[in-house]
Length: 223
Image 1 (cartoon, rainbow, N blue to C red):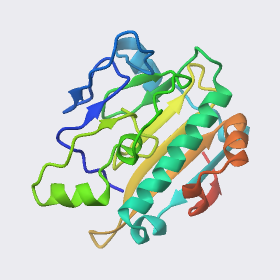
Image 2: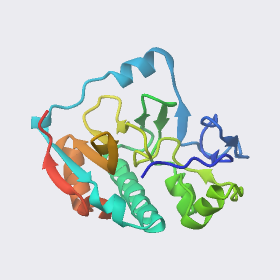
Image 3: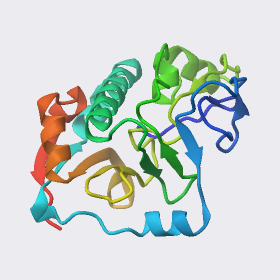
């Protein structure tokens, strides 16, 4: 689903807001989950090689479901995906350690997954997207209530070419990609591809499979 970004979107658990966001009033004594980083570390992380596909790699291609589901139903699947992937990250990353949360086209972060930044999140806060009711308000140029997005880099691609999460040694990589299918120059459908690199990540996800993945095609990663 291509993302509709709210004009008054806010970001919690992040020392600086993402583009267009309003800083939330968060106590400096509250543990933080998201930290911006840049410079040489950012360049290195963005260009770091991924695990070879032979070491363990699968992808889930979701296309038909994106066009057949209602907005709130799809957001519910994104929430389930976020909750289950966060549980996987907590299983694979020891307390106190972190993951890169990366996006070539936007701000990049370190994510400390054991900080309970998702606690009490609404559907909009957990997915970074308006519900159907508020989306329709925005379409009519009526400002919906602002909300605080808990994921500065969302677990779903949200209309971006690619988001990916990896520990500093890149022993595993979770990637979410968005593309548009076309025929004769006309867009015919949206495609989200979720790629898992690294055997430990694949095995952890398969123990508690996100509902969205079950609606897609499971394919081996060939490169």
